Length: 196
Image (cartoon, rainbow, N blue to C red; front, side, top):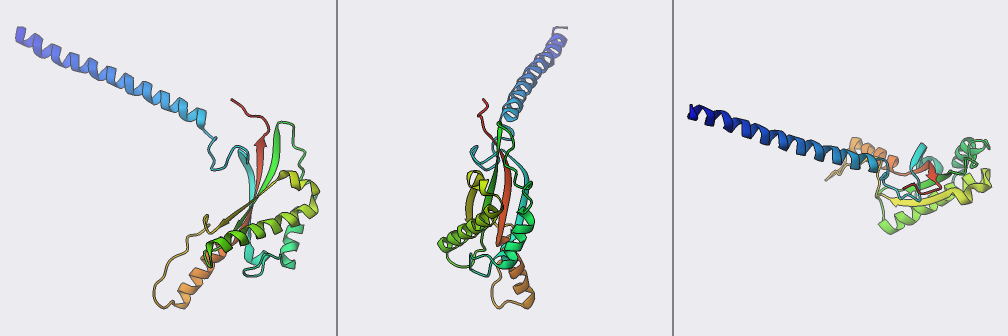
């Protein structure tokens, strides 16, 4: 009988240890869920000064806006900006006292050429886009950020081919690089007051 009591009490003590362990794991999981929910939405890849919410984003091909390797906008590109921003209601910066509307204009290039020159080209193209938008709304100066990415944020990865390229491979390269040469305009809402 003593033997039966021993075999009966051993699993019971192990079972209570497992329950305590499961309770501890549950408490830790709840703790991490609370931490995650407190931090949710705060890290969107941009600093708090740039914005917390992007209601819309416009991507424009640089090939339509600019001649190859240049930052002076083509007439066709100017027409694109006129059609997008001519309506004064499109760029209404009077949002509210709690948030501020900002446009973040990103200039992207492909990987051809020197990195430093690509940064300069991306910046000059973003600046040219800013100047075009500003023609339709003079208030833009207080509501814009200009960025240059060179080929650091490709929209499409460019495949690497070795040896002599076939016509199909050349076409794939052209299309990939063409997608990476772009102007991106983010329409952000920025919190005016820090919340703790």
